[in-house]
Length: 431
Image 1 (cartoon, helix red, strand yellow):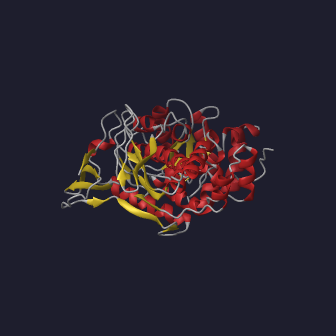
Image 2: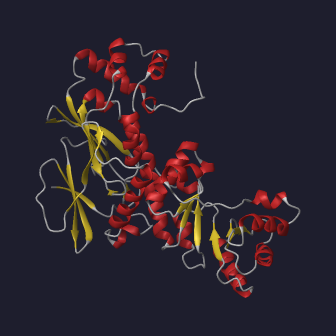
Image 3: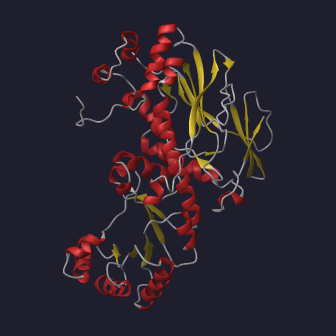
């Protein structure tokens, strides 16, 4: 019988076809062939100039818990997976292979070997769904967030998309956005798991709960102090600003605008706040912002952005398009030749070329790459013989990834940050 009263086990976040392949491979003796699987994107979303690697920290965190206990095995039997050889293999399953790849927060381009899994076929293939679901989701969010951070021109961005996506996806999205430069999130669980600063004050419902706007503002200030952010556009923006300053005084922390012609409203709001003596009160804007809307506000007197729907949904964060392909079997390169979906055989090495500190190319090769001045190795070890290479608290992992992203993005050529559609900022070349 289906159950909904317990957390999903990582091992069941798996497509059934992974297990049918394992069953067949166990039956014909190929399950233990040493294999290399590679995660890469054949192309970036249309017009995007780079991608941001995210999700590897969550993957490494989940891998030790990827087990098939009694409950998981019972679920498989209930779903018709009754092959005893398969169930015996899963009963003792523990990943014993190696995982390496781009450091979380790194940039990727078409053909970049973002993650490599080396293990017997049965161990490696059963991880495919978990690997791709985490990396595709988180990398899509981080890539979109990086564009928004760039468009914000150092003004802070707050992730607030929890009400627009699945509850667990919301936590992962908050993590990926913070990795790419968002200052804070509205999601409390993301704050608990990963140490991300959380922000939030009130919605229009709180204003409408009261007899009038002034009563709502007085209640909020009484509870949260004058440094709070008051939402001033429930009725009339200018009157809302006047009421906010009258209630909180010139030390009011911020006002929030959530509708209307934001560039015009922000400009008038700043003028009015200054006239009322609230010169240090910040102007925050929300309302279905994406990188283009944020860029359109560049000249407006805005102090920060709240971003939700366009960050956590496919419209603003198109899939990273990563695939998980077998590229080597028993030391022999293998490749898929399907039209439009080809792969390149063999284990890959990767370096990023630089000239004067600016990245110029991504070099990927199944052969050793001749070193040049300015090269930076991209592939780092993550898991060795089934053990995490550098175990750390999840919050610390995120701090490192965020710092790494900030470093590598600074090396991108200027054209990489253009919001207009264009080719990838770096060409991926063979070594």
